[in-house]
Image (cartoon, rainbow, N blue to C red; front, side, top):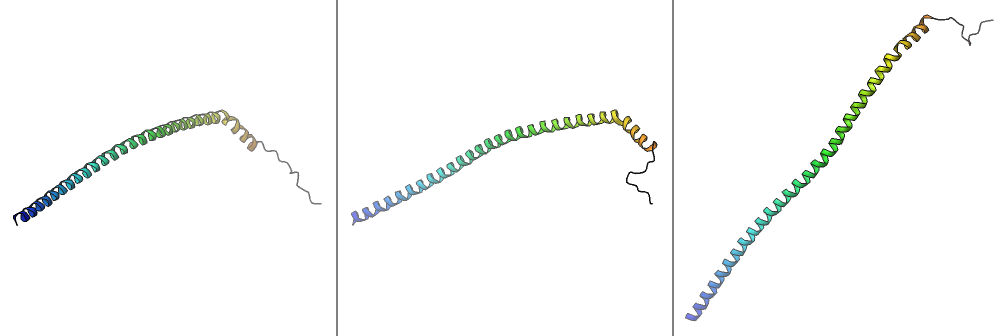
Length: 118
């Protein structure tokens, strides 16, 4: 009977060691999963920062070129305004003179389509 109880004790001890090993493996697996998750989060953050940096670079290039376009358009607008003002000052006298001549120097004439009643 002692050998039988000794065998049972060995089986119980073996079962306990197996449970301990299983618990230890579960702990290692949990640690590894946690570590893998942290590594993945770090990798995602790094990738996200890289993409944001690229986006900001492209955005600054686009916005920079739009800023240049805006400046060019503003410059062209100012030039056009100056041209129009110069043209106004240059032609104002002659246009006013033509208008006054047309209003003041009226020559009464009968229209070509006018018919006299017979």
